[in-house]
Length: 134
Image 1: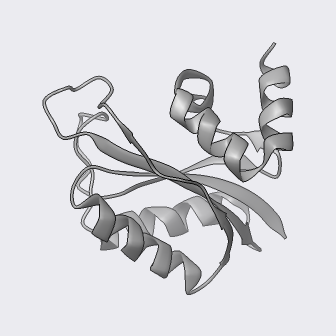
Image 2 (image 1 turned 180 degrees about the horizontal axis):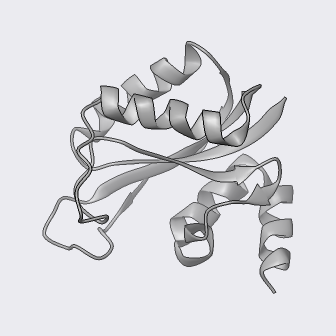
């Protein structure tokens, strides 16, 4: 089994879309633990609502590429529209941040809220991730 920390974000009906995403993931995989959700200001494109960001520690038997595709399918099902503006509004954003103890999303190092979320979900991973950057 693989242990994954998924970063979760939304700024379009966030309460509803985050709950729906959680339900869809839970139909197939075990969400071991949820972090708190933090309201954050948009990064890059500022003319949009604040985001609600959090994360889930998930156990999956899928390999990383297939699990990411599973998350993309959920994003599509919940109406995510992909545009050239990577910082635009989102119904849901699901990103693999940690895969089996390894940082796989460099946003972890640049976004404080991701570090907070990872620390809440697994403090051992957070310590090793910080040490591995230097």
